[in-house]
Length: 318
Image 1 (cartoon, rainbow, N blue to C red):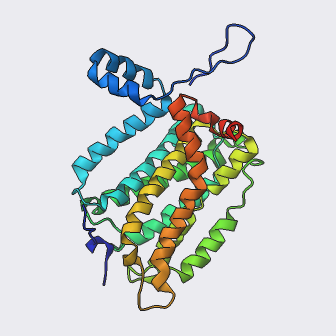
Image 2: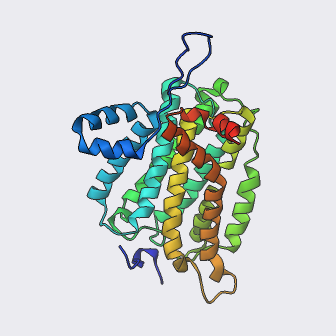
Image 3: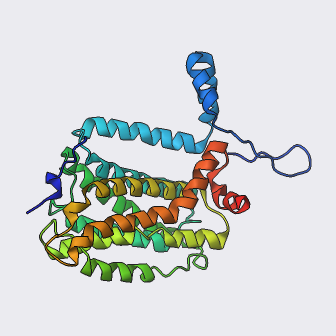
């Protein structure tokens, strides 16, 4: 039996009201590499630069997460490459936490796609059935002993709490008319493909199929949110950060599985010998789907624009 845990690669804003005219004036902060290099030579300039960039919500958010991720890596990781899979799960957990905290503080589910969150519930439920009782799809380092599973379980609980808020607590703040994407259109095909193309690392077909279904569905789960953005013509700040974090999570997962995809294939089977290629390919498709959004998201942070304007700014940039 070939288990993944035995695998080890060879190398380890604001919009202040204008004083005249009643319009709005944008405060733009552009990240300049020359000014950053100069600031390293002058402590006073460094203080001013840090103060300038910490005004950006995106910089504060991601800076805080990076410090948390570094701490977790130092405490819970063995320094193995496979920790990347746990880090991917941690980033995903972080994205759900952002949305849940925003809903809790604002008492509103505006801008959140219920269809997307219900898909994520199915993703986590299926993946947990494959990684809790079995070890085939776990990271090799010590984070695979319990941390990876806990991150996945907490993320599922957060997704469930968001669904509960939309359906029960704050249903009046949810606009079903703009969240019209039928998620069965992506769940059905993902299930069919998983039945045919699934790895064998657990050597227990139901959990192997469940893991494959979770990965395939997760690759297209963001589509309901993108369709909602297009109907509304704008993106909420917390959902923009959510999608950016999901893109980063998928990128990490893609790098990990691209490095170990041969473990997923069965060379003795005329169909399943392509499973590893399919797993990598489906994740690459998701990164391509999210590419344009992430490009404008990063440009918005660089220029100091509110990330809630990503969709509008993207449209005006075309």
